[in-house]
Image 1: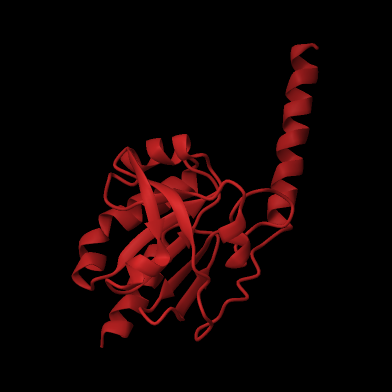
Image 2: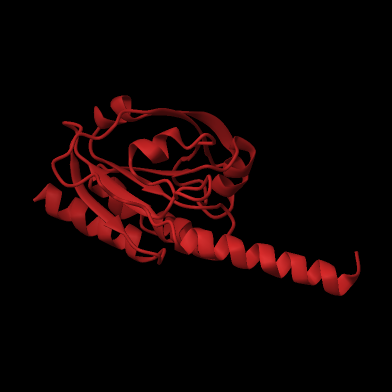
Length: 182
């Protein structure tokens, strides 16, 4: 295959993927007051693997579950860094944060050290079961959409945020956590 044909094929594939992603937003059918689906997933924090249980984490206080499409992509990296920068504020409110994507455990392990700066766990939902349960799976591809939830200790959705930008998710979840604390 010539270079120009290879370039054309790559451009066509990229365009197709972009259209599929744009045409398949999350439904965010989970609303305030809905019961949050319980889950357990393999995680990584600061390059070390472990496990996360929503049920166990809710015993300690509220939990932010944020779904992101792909580690080490521009917006997802910005979002992770913004959550990491704001972790002292979340911790002051006794809020646990976990990021969830369909990336492999190897990929989230690297991401947990780099962009998450070791400040919170990220989970590997490779089969997208958790993303589906939270209406955060893109329809056309095996990727999570950008949707965030704040869940109260009684296992209820307190706040939901979905938008394409990475900065609004940490800030909206922090704002919701501050309101919850009052």
